Image 1 (cartoon, rainbow, N blue to C red):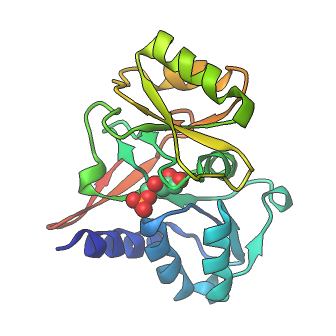
Image 2: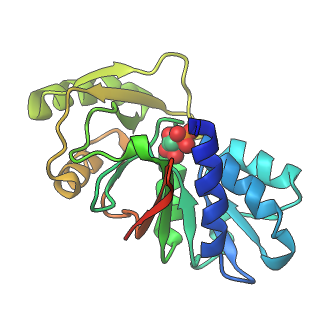
Length: 219
Ligand code: 5RP
């Protein structure tokens, strides 16, 4: 199966995690696009979605799925999103599509995070994928220095990228993320950091991995 077919497989499988009558948290990316397409087939059975990016909002609306603002809901039964890396404990790196801040906000509203990914995203220790860190533009150089000094990471500014929040992204190479929760808590409180792309506090409750043998479920 191609990577695209594996994404379709998990995007469709995720629909079974959407309760009837729910407002669903929807992530961002090519795998989530497959989920949105599948969600459209049951759109009459849900109340709507809270989206994590302009791109997902446009796709949801184009398919006739009502989109609510995050401030209009108190909680969501489920948030469904992809990942750039996921470890066997459900910790993730996210932000390859630059939507990490809104993704973390919507994930935080949700009772369950269902991660959908093809099996190439599963790693024992995260860090091969460059860690995205969204920063206030004036803090970028100082945050890059700290990433080098404290973690040995080489940060580069993502060229031409301005996030939905008007901020910039540093991509950090050379990290070995052995304690995701501690690194997330630490970097999150540095001045000028908007969001670090480690999702350990909001880790996946369930991970659906697309494999050539079908969907493998990690809980
Ligand atoms: C966007 C993300 C995406 O979920 C992540 O990049 C995975 O994307 P894809 O499904 O296209 O591989 O975090 O900010």
